[in-house]
Length: 414
Image (tube, rainbow, N blue to C red; front, side, top):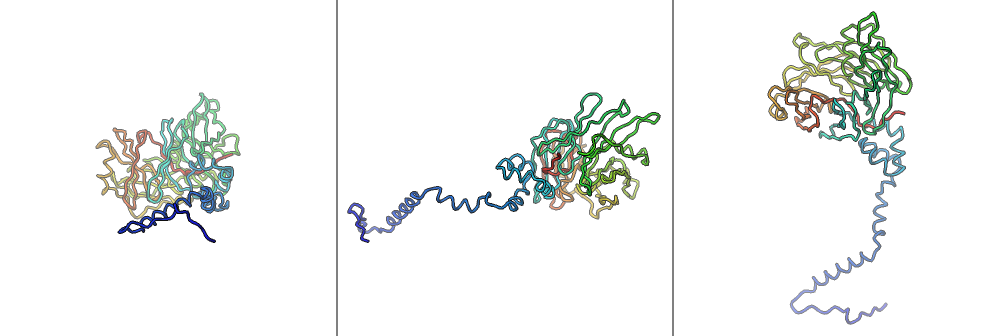
């Protein structure tokens, strides 16, 4: 085919002494740009997008991608993307798998209530925090699989107890706990845990009862969530008065167990959630001065740990084996003396004491705070392996802080 080029479009030879290469190159670039502009925009994008569109992924692969995201992001954003994501995220298989993928962290709330709880966890050695959009009426008690306890004090004769997932803001209201004509004088603490075999969630609540002619003493009631319409009473006749008094403490929750312990005592009261039997175990501290030392009982999520104070920046670490209630002292002591100068920058006074408050990631990252007259608002996170120190500023003083082990999960009850 012969193509006739009009004279006006014919290229003129370059002036003497000048090369035609730059002009030719510029012309070619303009022609290439013009060629791209003549192609429809959507035709260039469709092929590229269709090969990477997440909607083209099979359900199984999409499942394994979404299950690695945090619960508050899944509930507030991801589930609203489309119906397919909504039904996938709300499926029981997804919720159970998400619990298994969720690591233990700490749930921080104000003892006086009215604030938004903060979840702290350690990912790849770094501290991450997220504030839930759920506003607490009171502080949140012991938590298990993402479910925490919240007590609302109503009129003079009833307590309203809720199980709440702060990520989904879904409450489950439990049967009210009555006073029974004055026989129950005071209700104290409560916790929720799951039995390992039956996978039933149970709530335990401690209270002071007065049954004449006996004097007032601590007692324990339990309820199986979704099964019981009223509270059942746990047998405690075999326990000593000292062991019963431990029920005034906030329970520490581990997998399948609830524990009550006091900072000056070496005795631990443990409830097997499956059998509903209470037993007492003693930490085998070797010397009398150890027994008088300050003790900090902390849940790791899977087991119970104890930090025994030797000095202000030195603790011994003991761990209770799940199920056997046998205590073992770890070989290495927790020595933070070398980091004393770095840690004291978060202190507000010379008389403040550094206290461990919970495991962000056991046994790697420990949360601490200074307790004293200054009312420090700084929560410190110390990595025992790398000796790195992170911190966050709280909206409340540390002595008003409630700290429980928590999983940021999508767990819900129906």
